[in-house]
Amino acid sequence: MNSVTLIQNRIQDMKNAEYLLIAGYMSRRAMQISILVIIFSASSLIINAQITASQIVGFNFSTMEMHVKNQSVDTEGSTGIHFGLLLPLTIVDHFSFQPGVMFTSKGSSYLIDSVNMSISPIYLEIPLNLELDLGTNAFSVALIAGTYFSCGVGGNKIESGGAATDIFYGSGDSKDLRLMDFGINLGAGIKIKGFLISARYGYGLANLYPDDSDDTELNNRVIGISLTSSFAGR
Image (tube, rainbow, N blue to C red):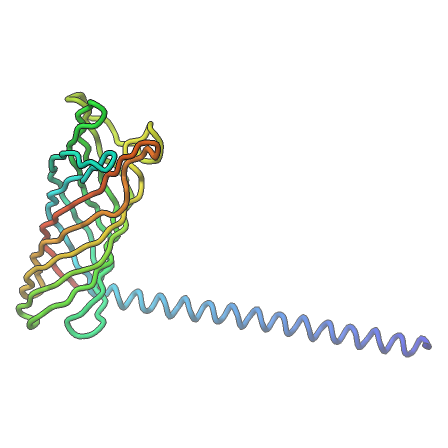
């Protein structure tokens, strides 16, 4: 092969490499543009979804259901509050999906290992509910069902009449409660011109007792009485 042919082949290889670089660059640009379009579209949907929001505030009447070695343990109830925002997303008329974020205080009193424990955890909770409104825009009956996920963010405990101390979340015998909770929501209410008065029951499914070595199960049980009011985000 003579030198001219070698030069021609080298020039062709350089052109091919340049074409590959351009193609790769265009492919990356197309991907970046696609990602930007997706982000913009998602942002637009979120912004539109946030045009209408709902404030929710109310009281909790809660307890913790406890079983030790499959035997039920008597517990006493506790009162608390909840408040937050819901973002209704209409699926069809009078039927909506309602995600939200709330602060909610729960708790209970019980006897465990000869220690009287009164515990009042505070959770950051994400409810994911469906709501069906039976009636008109002026007056309707609301049926509510869904789930919730929550994370412990504070609270206090009192052991055998002592001073209140902070709750420690985690796993192991040195902790008070597990960090995460989840469960089922069921409720009903009356809606009058954008105001909803409702009663909801939260049935916790997660075992909150922190020590796996003990055959003990602890679950949240909460009745919430709420006032929800809608407002425009713009």
